[in-house]
Every structure is written in C-alpha cells, then in structure tokens.
Amino acid sequence: MKIKEGFVLRNMGGQAVVVSIGSASKVFNGMVKLNETGEYLWKKISDGASRNDLINSLLEKYDVDIELATKDVDNFITSLKTPGIIE
Image 1 (cartoon, rainbow, N blue to C red):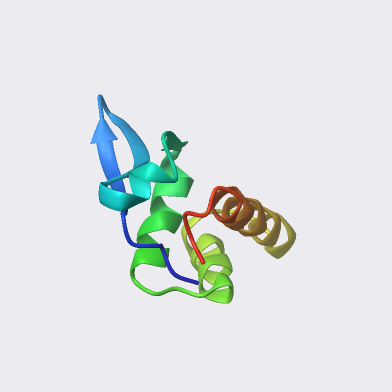
Image 2 (spheres, helix red, strand yellow):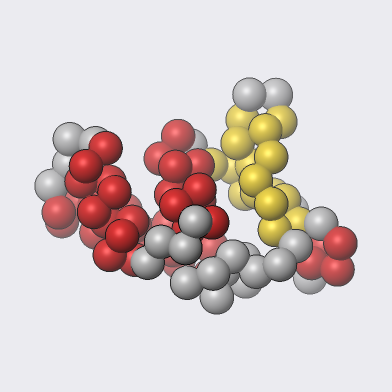
C-alpha cells in the first residue's frame, strides 16, 4: 500500500486534512478530513506500513480488540482507495 504522489497531509485550523497538490489536483479536487486515528494511520502508511502493520499499531496504541481494529483499518483503506489516494 502506498500513498500516490501528489497527496499530502496538512493541518488546517487544527484539523488534519489530506489534500492534492500538483497534477493530482486535476484528478482530485477536494480534501479528506482525518480524525486523530486517521492521522495516525496516514502517518503509518507514509512510513510504509502494511494493512497488518496498521492493525497491530491500533492494537498497541488504543484499547480495542482485533475485530474493531481490523474493521477500522479496512474502512480507512477503502476511504482512501475509492478516490484514488492510495494504491
């Protein structure tokens, strides 16, 4: 899993958002708001984390069970794949 070139994490008024820059903005003209967990996962993906790495990271950082961590990671990945932000 990899974040496509042209998508960056920014802080806008205390809110973490993903925006497109350069040629990526021709394809994606919006922003994705991230909560604390989403920002955490984004940074992990930026560092090269796999799906399993993300799940394990949530298990270590938050008091959640594996089913919830898996569901949350899968939902997050889908929310970024659908608009073409990650591949």
